[in-house]
Image 1 (tube, helix red, strand yellow):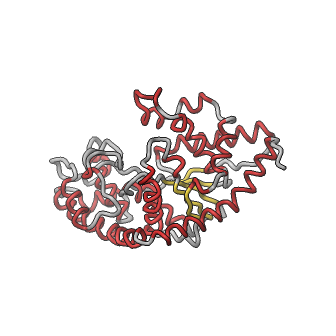
Image 2 (cartoon, rainbow, N blue to C red; image 1 turned 45 degrees about the vertical axis):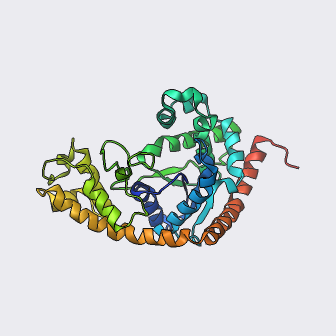
Length: 332
């Protein structure tokens, strides 16, 4: 059985993009792989986080994972900072990765923008920590969205270089798992921009905790165009809002976009949005209710994370010891 590692940041409200791009896929994988899922709070602080909110956000994301269908008894669920080996291996990889590799990372350029001289060193080097997250568990597969493929490639490069430098096969080279419809969910206000919790408009995203009234209101307000919906996928070219909404419908209803085009081709957006509201409420409503129940029981969530970190340490510490022995560190 292969081993999966993936992580999610505890930086605010989980939204539809998180669910369709990651959480739903994680749930689908849990019976076929040994799964390790991490709330990556070390990654979160590469940009400023209010300490008063970070712990609560970590609990909320944990609740979102469980409410989406992840079984904490069958999956390892923990917060990254509770397992020191992540940071320890990241330092080793800081000495393996090359500056040229990090200079090519697109997400640093996007996040730092014109203020890159004021960006934290952590923001620049966090792809090395991401590689450590994955390779610390000798993960064989990583579910990734299109925007994370470059970081996985870096992890693969680091695995190759470490193995080559030290004449070992210690690290497997992890393979990507990329899923089908709506793996990259776009803003409800602008179909050319990714759905994001950082967007100042709350109407740009559907949060996993939104109730039926909020989901209905946001979908009704979602940007559309004046044309009828196309009856084939080619008709979505140049229509980012139509492509986004139809992709969301396809993902939530487990259909292909081509099937959605056949079903709604020639119809008005108003008709389609009514159907999209129904399926979104039916899928997200129970998840939001369960999240609220779990968040109201922080001791349970803390217990899940504590148990998960214990299991993560049991896997990772012997692997870190292998790394230290390979590098030549004296362990007394």
